[in-house]
Image 1 (cartoon, rainbow, N blue to C red):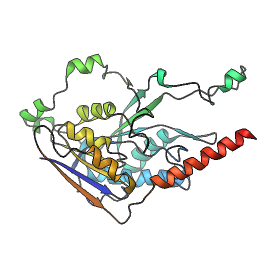
Image 2: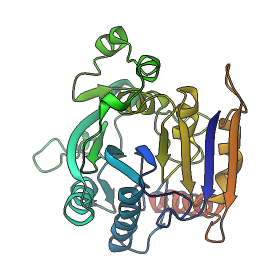
Image 3: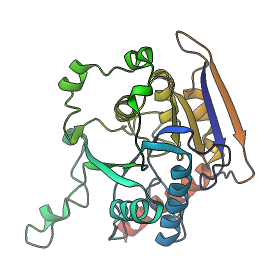
Image 4: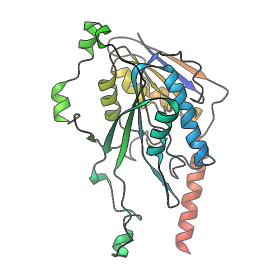
Length: 298
């Protein structure tokens, strides 16, 4: 039976998860105070980095030796200042937490879904040097390994076969490259109205490439539940942490009660440190949009 445990609470404390019990981490941390996703979630950048530091320590504790943690993230520009999130996460996870830096993959989004914005359009109005502000069409997948060796020989033959990667798909979709071209979750998607969701195809590749059938995948920033939804469909167990209790309904909708072959054992835990953030974010975003419109009229 596939087991799913969803904890509504702060993943800086993963007391519900035993040491060395997780086989893979797949997550996308909140984008630091992104104005239309997580406005003013953290009081400053130091608090943001300290949150990632504490979560990283917990991930190191619960992950089995030799297994990996995958972070989907990107630098964020707030009011003209670019914050080096990718570089800082690497610095923290390697030099403070103790992970080994194993891999970086670029997730490139289709250019067709990018329109010239107010940012890149500046050059059209001022076609001169020093007016160049490009639109971003990629994110980075940074992969860390917990020191130790994974003994592949201990995987039962039947599990190896059930976890086999389809070579035709691997070659056709060019998984072998360090640049993956995958369509992002579009604004019309029902889940995008809640949070900055990452595409299921991205999660599927990481789970297939770094875990075996029946193993446990953990996401410390679950959002609307993409990681757990994909993990279940691939025959993996899943543990997810989400601090925003207002996302519970969305997560419940995405977690199936059963697959074609078995029932799903789902446990929801609501801790005292869970928060209600989505309504607050919507109010802040609407206020920001209103102020922006008023500023343009002046």
